[in-house]
Amino acid sequence: MRSNVLKRAGVFAAVAIAVTALGVPAAQAQGVRLGWKPTVLPLPAGANPLGRGFLTGSDGHGEYTGSFAVDDKLQVVSWRGGKPVLRGVPEGYEWAMAEDENGAGTVVGTASDYDTGVSRSFVLDSTGFHLRETPAGYKEAQTRAINSRGDVLGQVIHEDPAKDGAIVWPAGGGAPVIIPMTHEFEVPLDIDEDGTVLFSVSGGSLLWKNGTFRPLTAPGFEYADGSAIRNGVVVGSASDGTVAGSRAARWDAAGAVTLLPGGEGAWALNAFGLTTGTAPVPGSFRGKPTTWRGTKPAGDLKQPGTYTGYHASSVSDDGTFLGIASNGPLDEGGVPVIWRLAP
Image (tube, rainbow, N blue to C red):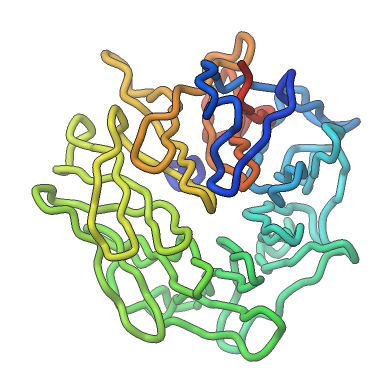
């Protein structure tokens, strides 16, 4: 799944790459040295030349989706065959942030009205935008993620912040499930295929399923922070509370933690365990984007052209990393970039 790391603190190769059932490129299996080659995707007509957006999701079959500034509005854009398709915003709204996309090509996100400031959750499919009803008693809803079967995770906002909560709209319809906030600074981050929800809370992370919470733990570390979950596997970081003490980490389905070599944090993974994160750069607060396959290093992501900053926040099931590049602050967005393996 994908990560909101940039927005909280504040992701075509020259040859075809075959992917086995385990998600390992055939060329890699033959011992060919591979590198993650960046491609800056073209922006649609009317787009801010600096991009000013985020590439956030993929269907795993060559479509990449995000939201970028076009005609002075943040609009949903998808790339198909390497070409941008402007998908716009829901009717009556001026701002739409695409947050995630699943294998069926269903995009989820949050739309906002500039005049009222109210936010609504939306689903975007081949028939267009569909706004979700905000449950009675809440003033707005925001979207976080979608899993493969179509369950949508979001957050509902109440006039009284103590009554905020998470929400799951189940695939196929039915009444949404509200998860009341019961921990300090409880924020939903991601939803797994079986409906398990990953939460960030004060002091760490929790996993919720069927009304029961369990904490992530990392023996020897003070904090265990998850960023994304897929097939029971969580990636994130373990730390002693300092930047220098942060280590990229991976938790298996049983909750056992493994530190990922050379990393300070991991942000997203795909169905085959391909993971994106950052490695520390001595003397700098800005990490270097890097990758792992399972628990093994899979190489750094190459710099896109002359852009001084770049970040991958998602990885698709076809082995493509998605993110942005910019010569300014990355939390303000950038131009869309994908990375594919190339000899």
